[in-house]
Length: 329
Ligand code: FM0
Image 1 (cartoon, rainbow, N blue to C red):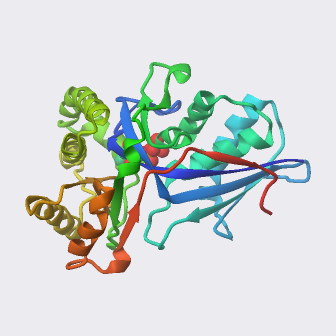
Image 2 (cartoon, rainbow, N blue to C red):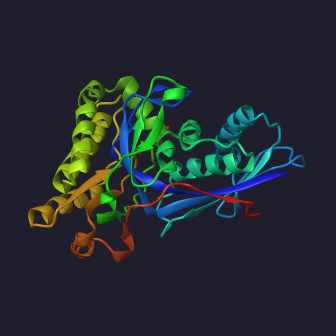
Image 3 (tube, protein in one colour):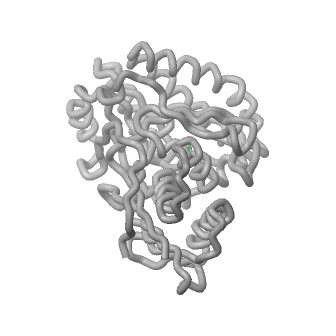
């Protein structure tokens, strides 16, 4: 029997990963850059044992169905191949999120699974190789191996596509991200399906690719200069461009709900009133507000005039993956 456990924190991209050039290897069309957060994380234990006759996946205490287990099982098969192991596994995951508002993230989930497997099977992967492995589970997971600001270099092959931390002199510790949790009843289009449809059909997608390298360059300069306005402007603009591409997909779609627009407008108005803050959004209606730590409480207070306090969660920069011996049973 081989067992291991890992905890990985979620990350939010300031320059988005949007589109794959290789679906199987999960090689992205563009580099992306994220901030790992302390607020939301996944703890995953894995046990490989002779006695198992199939892979099993438990999430927050509930045994998962075939579809959810298949994604995990596909990843486990990759690990088995790489570690030369033929045993089935039991995977037990717990998502630590402040509320049940659809914040469970594939980034923290697949990073934690990769870390737990690395520990259990004594694969002794370097952080770079662990990032490559996590990438195969979910692209954004490769960034959750590291804390703080992280860049995913798109690479040209499995060997060259991985994330790395960005030197920042700990500037991220002075920042915060406020989550505005928006629950609408709309059925979600997963990021995987959404980006695939966009790459295949959106006439705006080439425009995305044309400008993303420049955004990346500028945001890295802003990080070096600790220029919060620069960081926020680039991040907000980049998110809007990503979401713009979905409107020209065939069939078109959007992740925005009316409440997302309300939130975006509020961020602009709080900013115009003198408190610097900027928004970003991913493959869902939640809005994330990037601000300086010293202003977070005042911004939350403003947001509370429209949103319930239960919809507002403040997170700060978080650490890289942590691994533990043994497993939760
Ligand atoms: O995080 O198909 O990693 O850079 O969150 O599993 O590789 O779930 F929605 C925007 C994340 C995409 C931007 O995609 O996709 C970002 C997004 P997978 P992911």
